[in-house]
Image (cartoon, rainbow, N blue to C red; front, side, top):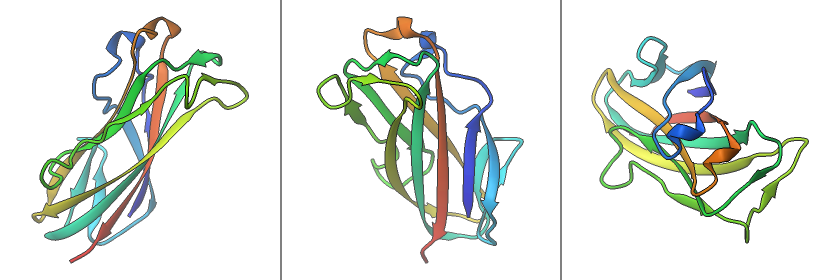
Amino acid sequence: MLIQLTPNTTQSSAYMGEDFTDFAGTVLKTSVDAGWDAGTKKLVFVTAGYYRVTIDSRMVPVDPYYLLQDCAHGAYLEGALSVFNRSIHTSNNNNSGYLYTPTPRLTWHDEFYVNATALQQAQIALYFNNQGYTGYGDVSLDAVVSVQKLL
């Protein structure tokens, strides 16, 4: 299954670093093994088994001249195996700096594994925290999620 997650709202600078889960999901490619529950805003593993879930995420600032200062960003997948249910990436002025127009953005990639039971649901969350620079305003978080049944 392939699904595009678009935010229903922007993430307010007042809540930087908290999990963001307010997504609308558009299924781009259907699967008999996985689906999207629009009511709960969660992935649904239709059949039991092992799955690989890939999340390609993007942060787009509302302010077109957004300065990154030791920011942390990542993804979370409820029910992923072991300690690998949350990613942590970092960026700062040395490796990212200003995000200029016309399309300022920060992107990252994560991969998770789930041993799912039939009809198990899993919350997807993205997070972004620009430490010390919350005054720059809101950011938009979105993602493309791929769900592949392995076994």
